[in-house]
Amino acid sequence: MHRTRAVPLLLPLALVAGGLTACSSSVLARAADDRPVVLTTFTVLADVAQNVAGDHLRVESITKTGAEIHGYEPTPRDVAKASEADLILDNGLNLEAWFGQFVESVDVPHVVVSDGVDVVDITEDAYAGKPNPHAWMSPVNVQVYVDNMVDAFSDLDPEHADDFEANGAAYQAELQEVQDELVDGLSALPENERALVTCEGAFSYLARDAGLTEQYIWPVNAEQQATPQQIASAIQFVETNDVPAVFCESTVSDKPMQQVVEATGASFGGTLYVDSLSEADGPVPTYLDLIRYDTTTIIDALSGSTS
Image 1 (cartoon, rainbow, N blue to C red):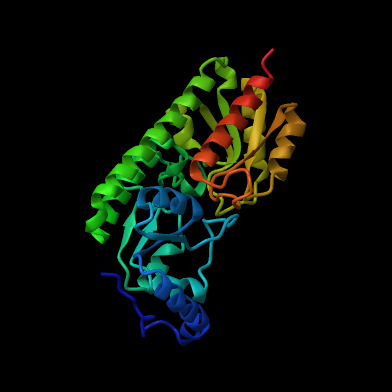
Image 2 (image 1 turned 60 degrees about the vertical axis):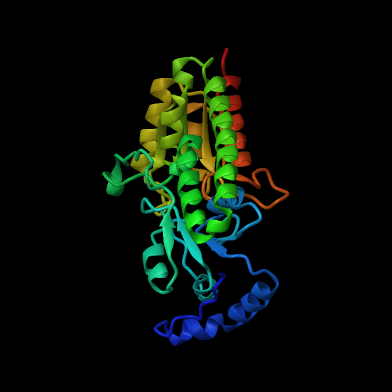
């Protein structure tokens, strides 16, 4: 049975007052749609979750398209929205630095969808030894996400458990297809061209599962200011390995990577998407679009410099 929760009394008065309008709008929306509400921390998770949920659950994202997820600051409207959800999904692995305090403000169960993935640790800078949070950038890992969502949705809405399982299996087949496309597309490249140089270290899982060598300027977008040492390290890697093309992500400035381009003569291979989907009429409105877009961009840029 779908349930509605009020904003917890322990929330600061300012948050309650700021969320009143959001609550009123939410109540009206829920009167017209009584499906259980699943709230995710960012748009990528929302799209994956919607594929598993089908029409049985209403899936929404806390952050909007184009948002930088690492340093996001929840608003009173976000808190009000979360207090009325039936389930919250977060990525975990220290991605949502703001999430711990946020989820404590609402009495709503939550599930960490990355539980069970084979974690890759960050090896550099202040984040060394901590898990790389970008596990969703591998279609192999997202199949684990799907399993966790199937279990969580089945607990939330047991009546439709068989549908969630069927939806999850169909989506996992699509994920494996994208993974196979990536591996096949990279297989013909010479060893030195199987290198992925990006602004953020967001591709460790994709690189591992596709046989790429990864290099980045900074490890996590929580600190976007590139240091001279970080840029110099990227330049050295590109020159030493004769890497033909380098990339940057859509939610950060590519100026530091352009310095690498100027210093090495490598081409700028294009903008990659990681932390956010695009609008519906943009290049990556779904997660599968995101992975396929990044895969095509990477393969085209690296192979285009092959003599």
